[in-house]
Length: 227
Image (tube, rainbow, N blue to C red; front, side, top):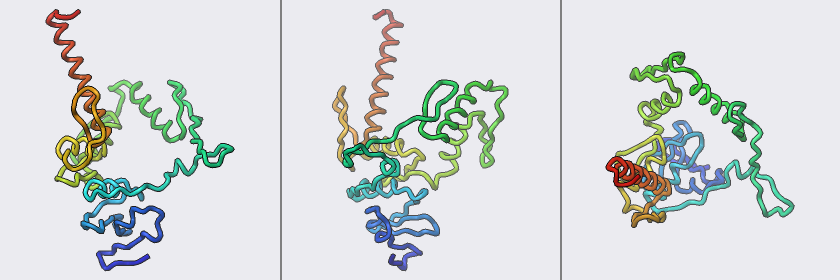
């Protein structure tokens, strides 16, 4: 492992299986990665490299193959050793709705959402943000508030402007809307001539089309043109 005189950043490409570290240096004390091309600093969350892959592709048009994820590494095999069979047995079943899950902690979160729906609002405790006083009775809304308003250092940053968001899909939709010239549009709409860089942008576009169609139909019914 080679150390560089660059604020405690180190070259970990020889120790890591991921090729992404050939393009970045790592500062272990701050969990920050520095791009070798433009010196952009990115936060490394729990060892994840998604933001680094996204930066290379969006800013430098470099695509780095990802290593096998843990879920793939835990796959079983058929008699043919070259054929992987994913282990998808859902052994944790919800007693309320019967839905199955592969992990116990996912079932716990699912049950908490059931309890929030079943508990009357009058009996729910107020969740109060210590930083700004925001109040809600719903844990999901409380967590979303903290992520969007008070944890901006963990947000995904747009490589082309100052926009940032805690949800990567919202950042993709922003890039498709505000910076469509920076990448190839590979997702085409079947209903119009529009195309998109990211699949989630196409999905959002289809949702908007369905909403417009419902509102148009409602307007025609109110006017008595259709029944």
